[in-house]
Image 1 (cartoon, one colour):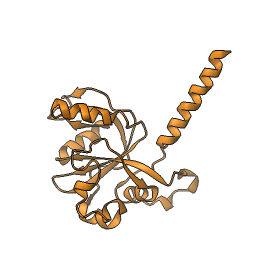
Image 2: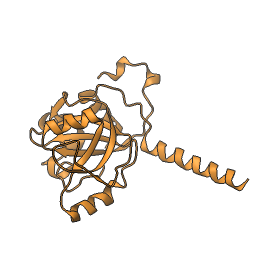
Image 3: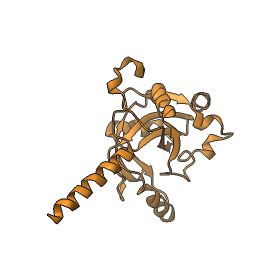
Length: 193
């Protein structure tokens, strides 16, 4: 995707840093199912792990940015924006296995566009300084699911350049929080009248 091909008023002014959630998935078929259903979740494990994951999942808000890492073939794919917060439930009618904490997504690129871990290490600064990024980057190793990685906005732009099919014109998380706070403050004033 070439952002230069779009008029500048289509490219939003975004903050310098942002949070990126990375979700590992073993099979490309599961990624394709998530893409087709505009839904993502994480594989269900034991109760203790689920409780820990749910605590972290509650911090991920609507309009969070995400990326999928296919652990079987060591590739990144399908950048997306969340369209809902994770739900505290399990689902077993979408994928072959039981998954938990589903949330709606808007894919900005499809699973047909892939970039290998080795190529991404040379292109994305969040990976280039890591000896073993699969153990150091949150979300890739399974222990840090729903833990954000703080990255530069330019890195997200590069990810979209490499994997995206669509411009990210969604509000940023901070903008969403500010808008919610403004609505709440306005409502409190109106309630006093």
